Each structure stands twice: as structure tokens, then as C-alpha cells.
Length: 256
Image (cartoon, rainbow, N blue to C red; front, side, top):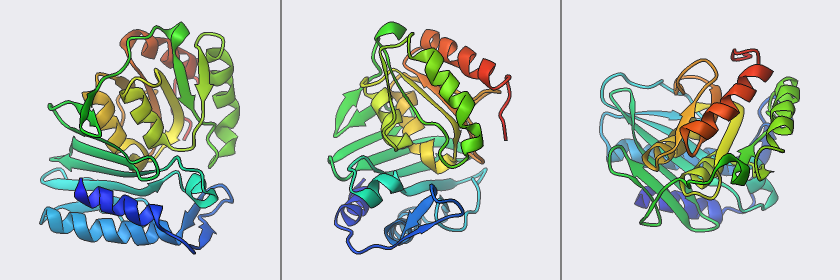
């Protein structure tokens, strides 16, 4: 947690960084992303000798079936960060023997630290958190419309169009890690993105699970070795309704 906080301080105090695209104008990286990932790689691998590292901005080794693997997004919400919008997160997950073990999600601009260890519950700034018990009609849904692959946007818009009259309202903040932690702490009740990479959701998904939330992909469980859809909710009933709509709009299959 100390390493993640120090990482967040570096993000918060970053100035004069450069901005480049990673193939499309929507998918950007800053020099702060790269520098922060280098810091996290060095510190986390030193913290757990023999562990491996999967990061958004560098070479990855995959998830080790034995031992420990870090899955890291140095700045989730890079576009927000580059524009001065304070909805970003440092996201660090630790996997043990190929399975989720611990997650840390820190927004340095609000000083909000979410963390969870498997079997020990989820916390925000040291206080236990839990998903809400709100029904669908009172629920807030967080989502996005696949900015990096806009060919997938139309069915995502259709999901939002169908969900909007069923739930209370919809949010799109620009950080998957932050939004999944909002679900974990009971500030939102539903979540959907058609394509997330493991570093986008791994740490927050551990927090969500330990907070009592539920999640799945279109064709089965959430995976962490490649991009996948993420459908999540505060309870099974709300998840089933959202899943059915997503599945119908995408013909029951992952579209990539």
C-alpha cells in the first residue's frame, strides 16, 4: 500500500509530461504513465522476489501458474489525467498461483485507497465497504462505449438505451478501476464495458468480489490473460438483467 501511495503521489505531482497516441487518437499514453510503471515494476518486483509483472505500458510475461504475478495499470484514466480531470487511479493487483489474491486501487487526487485481500473483505481508506442493496430501479449504471474500438460502440449504445429506463441513471467517468470500486462501495449498482484489458479491472475486481459484488463476461467467467467484456452488479438479480441485455445486443458472443 505504501508503494501504491507513493506511486500516486508521483502521478499527482507530475508536470510537463508528454502525450502520444498508441495507434489511435483515443488511446493515448503520457510520459508519466511510462515513468510510473517503471517505478512500480522496480518496487513491486523487489517487494516480492521471484514475482513476475504484467503492465499496460511495457513488456508482459503473462500470469504465472505458480508463484506471484503483479498486474498493473500505472494510470487508469490517462485521458482524464492528461486533461486535468481528477478521476484516475493507480491500479495494482497481485495474483497467487494464477488466481486473484489482492487488489489496490488508489485515486491520488481524492486520496481514496481501495484495497482487498482474498477472504479478508474490501476497504476504502481502512474502513470496510460493501455493495449496496438497491434494486435495479434505484441503481446507477457505469459504462463506456468502447472509445478505442468504435466499431463496437453501436451495440454498447443500445445496451445503454435499453438500461436507461430500467435503472435510475447512467455514468461514464473515464476510469474502469474507479467505477468498479464505486460499485464495490455502494455508490453504483451496475457496470458494463465490452472490452477491458486485465490491468484495467484486475485490482478493482478483487475489491468488488470481496465487497459482495458479482461479475461475469458474455461467454463465462471474467478472464485476466487477455481482453474481455466485464458485466458486474451489486447482486445476482441485477446482474442477470444486465447480462441478458448485453448478450442479446452482442448475439451471445464476445465480438473480438
